[in-house]
Amino acid sequence: MKFVDLLVPQAVKVMGASSSKKRVMHDLADVVESAYGIAAPQVVEALMERESLGCTGVGHGVALPHARLPGIHEVKGVFLLLEKPVDFDAVDRQPVDVVFGLFAPEDAGVEHLKALALVSRTLRDAAFCGKLRANPDAGKLYTILTEAQSVQAA
Image (cartoon, rainbow, N blue to C red; front, top):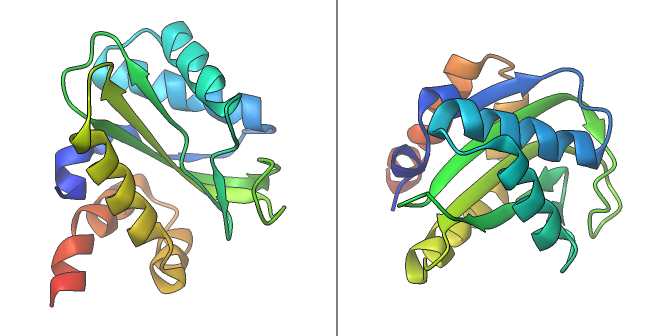
């Protein structure tokens, strides 16, 4: 699995107005709706339900919110770079500015886990996240993300 399998260019955004964790969830849902056609209220509900099980702020300014959704047939992603970091209740108590949302079919098994592992492993790389943070342009971010595996493989 590769980032190019998870993302479409319309699912990569730079957000300037996110003021809270809840607002970030709504922003993610809006992008899911516009990029993949899944109703935003349904996405927010699924994200908040998953978040109630445990925070998806994984540390170092990164959050990986994820949910299973009816009406989606393969794992899809949304990437948000927040211009202003927000409190996300992350494990290290640091505010979050890099958000990668993953959305899987309700019956997804191993594919969902593979996607989560890929995103988690990639965004654990401080230099890679630094490169993302230094390029606040959605087109450049999409290119950086989708070329990530070829750079790591080289």
